[in-house]
Image 1 (cartoon, rainbow, N blue to C red):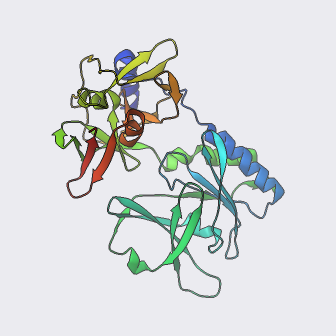
Image 2: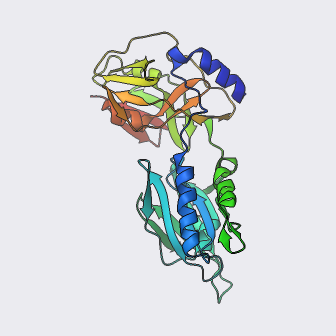
Image 3: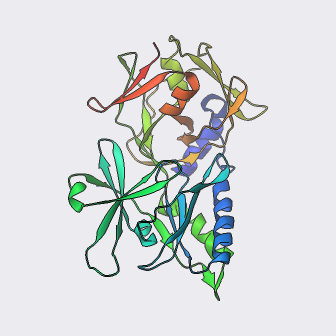
Length: 322
């Protein structure tokens, strides 16, 4: 299915804005490998690593710690705006708590719960783990606090097999980092959410990726064509880039709002094409799904200047331009 989608995407690049995915940036991997090597070279007792994508943006948060009941977390970091960013780590949990995580769903939100076994008791401690983009906090909870919520399929990723003869082995670290997608494969599932524009429901098909709704950029441009948040979409062949012109009426090319969602889960890849809004490059992630470019609806809202709200009771993405 994946090869078929890639071939189809290449044939309709000019129309669908699909791009070859072999060039997708993975700079976080090299940055993580270098950082882990540096930390373990200075302190080989902290030789366990956990990767967990708390904010569900496709780039995991990385934590280095010492294994065992007295294992402290030496540091946490991730990649933001193409540079390593420090994460303030909690001091009230052992590092092993980050290697035994269960995820629960509550009212469309996701609760990460870490599990640890203290040194002098058989009682298991549970901690709600919350990451705000700069700091990870751990709040002790009871099992009853999450019993009523359903589990979300999830696997954290961790290992302590990084040393050879007492020194960090770059090849082992690289293999671990590069295997992240094999554990947490990025997939897209047909979205069951409805979409409305200024109170009127519109027929727009989308996908759910990492618990967020993604839609074809041309479909959103089409449903906003007669609103104050209208924008045009184009393809700059000289820069191999997606272009967005704010305030311009969308130029129809055909195929907009056609039913493209299928009933099975699809593998997807990040679209490597740069994105320009009114001539200025923007740092916005989008995905290639079935040969088309899909954007997170909230990212499009930020770019085009419309408001978006999630109506839990009606399961509707509400777009407001007035």
